[in-house]
Image (cartoon, rainbow over all chains, first blue to last red; front, side, top):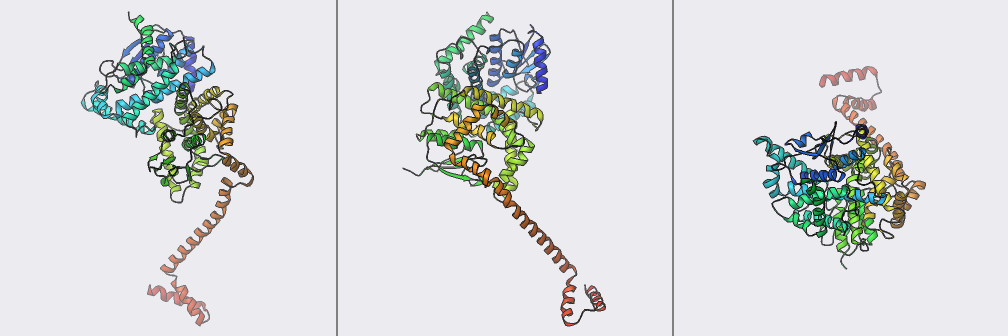
Length: 259
Length: 325
C-alpha cells in the first residue's frame, strides 16, 4: 500500500467506528495452516481481543492470495483490508484503540525492539524449521500447504514456496545454519524474552501491549503444534515464566469468551 | 601464546576505518574488547579466505564470515565487551540488534546500492577505483545485484524498483529506528553506561557510514544529523577508538590524499591512456594501409633516394603496383 493511500485509509478509519462484522481471514485451520502463519494469525487475534474489538475468524483456502501483501492474516473492516500485525496496530490506533499509550518514550523504543526480535529470530526460526528441515518439509509443510489443490498444482506451489523461503534464508544469512544452531537461536531469543518479562504479569507490567500479543501468538503456537520433532517446543518449555505468561493470556483473553 | 587471528576487511575511506557496515561492526567490537587481531585491509574480496568480507581466519585455520559468528568467537577467546552487562541488558542488546537488522538494513541497502545517483556517483565509483584492473569492471555490478536480491527477499517483493514510494517507505522505517535508538541512548555516553558493548558496535557500524559518507541523496544523513546524541555517539567512537582514521580524514580535507589524490592521479593516467589509444589507432591504420596497398610508398621512398622525384614516375610506378596486385 502506498503512503498516500495509507494516510487516506487512516483518515477514513478515524471517521468510522469499529463495525460488528469485522472479519479476520486465515488459511484452513485443520488441514492447511502452517506453524508460522498460525502464530501470526493468533497474535493478531490476541491483539484485537486485548483491545476489546470483536472479530470473526474465517478460514479460506486461498487466504494467502486474498491478502493485499500476500501475508497472513488480514482483516476486513468496513471498506478496508489490512494485513499483518504492524499495519493492523496502526489501523486500530487511527480508530482510537491502542494499548501502548501509557508507555514512555524509552519503553516504547524497547517494545518496538522486542517486537523486531520476535520477527527476526522466532519467526525466521519457524520458517526455517518448516521449510529448510527436510523431514518437516516433506512430512508436514509441503502436504499441508498443497492440501487444497489438485495433484500437479499443489506440488508446484509447495516447491515454489519452499524455494522462495530458502532463498530468503540465504539472504538473511541463515542458509548455512544447521538445525541445531537454529534451536540454539530460539533458546537465545526465549532467554532474552524471559529475562525481559521477569516476574511481571506482562512485558510492561500491568498493561498488555502489542508485544504481549505477538509473543503469545508465537510461543503458544510453538507449544501447541505437533511437528516431526518436539525440540522446538522443548526449548520454549524450559522457561517457566514464559509458560505461565502464555497460560495467563490464554485464560484472560481466550477462555472467557469461549465459555 | 599462539599467533593472533587474522581479520580481513574492506579498506576505509571518508574518515572511517572501513567502508562496509559488517566490517565496521567487527572492527568496533574488536577495539572495544581489546582483541589483538592482525588486520588486513584489502580491496579485493577474492583475496579473503571466505570469498567475502569481513572474514576472520582463526589460528586453527578456521574461517568465519558472519559478524555475529566472529563476535561469538572473540567472546569465546575471552575478549568480551559485554562482560559487565546484566542478563536484562543482554536481552535488550539482542532486541535492539534485531531492530537494526529489520528496519535499518533495508534502508542502508537502498541508499548505497539502489538509489541510482548515490550508486553511480559514490558506491560504484568507490569500489571501481579501489579494485584491481579486471575486477573493477564486473565486481561492483555483481555486488549490487546481490544487494538488490537481498532487499527483494527481505521485503518479500519480487518486482522491486527504485522509486519515490519505496524510498519513502524505507526511509520512514529507518528514521523511526533512529528515533527509537536516540530515545534509548538518551544522554548516556554508550547504550549501557560508560563502557561500550556489542550493541554499541552494531549501532556504530550501521550509522557511521550514513553519517560520514557524502551522498548526493543524503536524506538519511540529514535525519541522523538532526539527532544530536546519536551523531555525537558515532563521532565519539571514531575519536576514541579509531583516532588514526579520523585524523586521516582531517588531513584529507587539507592536503587531499585519498579521494582527491585518486582524481589527480587519474588525470595524467587519462592523458596517457588517450595518447596510447591514439597511438594504437594510428598504428592500426598504418598497418592496414601498409598491408592493403600502400607498400608502394616505401618503394617510391627507396627509389626516391636513388632518383629525384618525378610526378610521372610515381604515377607509372603506382600503375605497375596495381597491375601486380
